[in-house]
Amino acid sequence: MRLKKAEREQLRRKYDGHCAYCGVELVGNKWHEDHLDPIIRQVDKPTERPENHRLDNMMPACAPCNRSKGRQELEGWRKWLAGHVNSLNEYHGIYRMAKAYGLVVETAAPVVFFFERCEAARV
Ligand SMILES: [Zn+2]
Image 1 (cartoon, protein in one colour):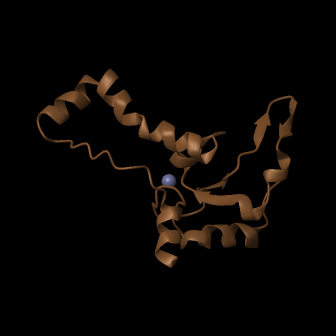
Image 2: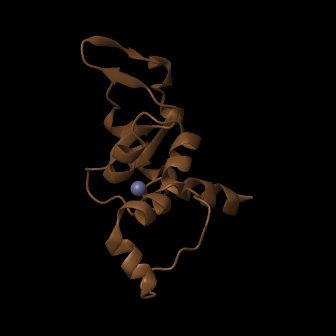
């Protein structure tokens, strides 16, 4: 299931060396190969949706984005990320304090992934 070295390099260059999701520059070789439409690997069970292991379904991702996305479909992950602000307000007093003092400003901006901005710029 591993990509060949040339395929991995092709994937790294897909968004000019940036994480397809947050846009951070991918430095070194510690970035992850994410499946946009996920595959589900399970211990002691066959992999679900192995047909999704194709280079055209793969995205270069930084480790935090790959871990955060996990098995989620893109739209599910987008909703989950958008809900982070609610969680911060609900559970984190330090966030509410930072907001009260104007150190943090909520924008209500939609979650737009880096690859979507790249594709919009190509039009
Ligand atoms: Zn990222």
